[in-house]
Amino acid sequence: MTRRHNDYTRPLGDYTCPNGCDLHGPSIPKESRQHYSKDATHFSRMIGVEIPGLYDGVCYWMCPDCGERWHRFADGRVYDAVQKEWERDLVYQVREADKGTR
Figure 1 (cartoon, rainbow, N blue to C red):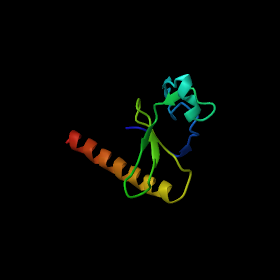
Figure 2: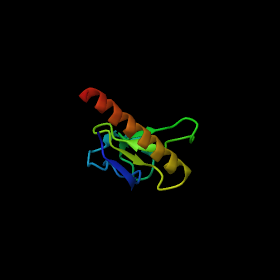
Figure 3: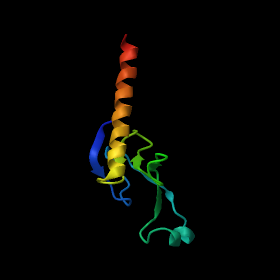
Figure 4: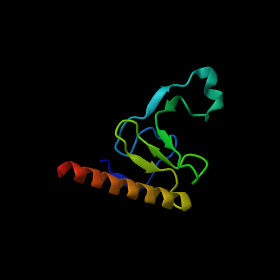
C-alpha cells in the first residue's frame, strides 16, 4: 500500500515522485523541443490520471514505479473529489487485505 501525500503537489518541471523515484523519460529530440516549455529536455514518466465526469483533464499524478499518487491541484472541487476517491480506494484495499487473512 502506498503512502498518501494529501497536501502534496509538485510543479510539472519536477521529475521525482514524493518517494524520490526518478521520473525522467526519454530525451525530447532537439528539433521538437520548440513545441514544449523552453526548459524541457526530457519527457516525463508521470502518469496523469483523469476521472471522467469530474474534470476534463488530469486530476492527479501517479508514479509508474512505486504507485504513489499526488494532487495536481492544491485545493478546490477537484482536490476534494480526488481525496474522496482515494479514501474509497483505501477502504477497498483494507477490505481486500482482510479477506486474505481469513
